[in-house]
Length: 259
Image 1 (cartoon, rainbow, N blue to C red):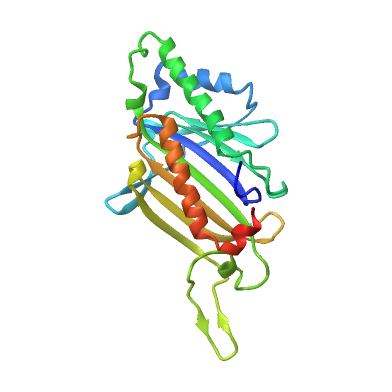
Image 2 (cartoon, rainbow, N blue to C red):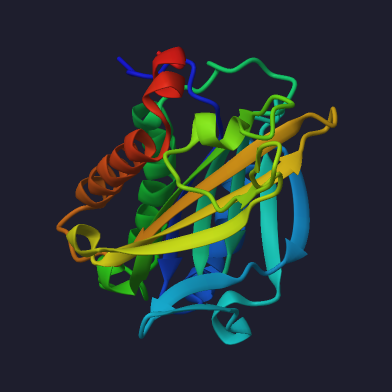
């Protein structure tokens, strides 16, 4: 049972990134798309997505077209809640909540991870079905896993609303009448996560939603290599990191309101 049933989760993304364009072998990429299109019938193509890595205390964002190819395939479920993204070197599963949908529709980590794992297990079976790939060590093809949470928190008209939401000390300007705090935030924090042999990239921005309401967008991206024994162990460990950061980032008052 989830502790925060009213948490403002707007998106959850599971991902696996490969060392090479391995999904192009024996056209697995295209047979997987054909198979998934039964459950995710709306298909779009986009440019290949960038990859973010933490290297020598610097955040590197780039794309290697030799591995990724030039096309990303997006497969949407008919209801729009689910999105599978596939390119030659990665597979992502997104659960997405639109702004007009009420908070609390989030199915939970366990349910969504099960859907993602089913896709990965399908890929593994396809490797085993090909004579020239069946002896390939699938785990060695994996460069890293990723788990990303996006929260969209409604803000009020009070300039101090960020202080009511976040456990952060913000800069301010003091004048004769009152303190002026930031109305706009564009920030990024990176923290090492040795338990998953990776890092946590936290982005906090202010924006307007589709109805022009002021919102706070918190994106927490956890990424690391597959040093743990199983995919389950990695994602469970990453989920614990997410929960810990979530409970430390937001104030006790707002956390209580989400229970």
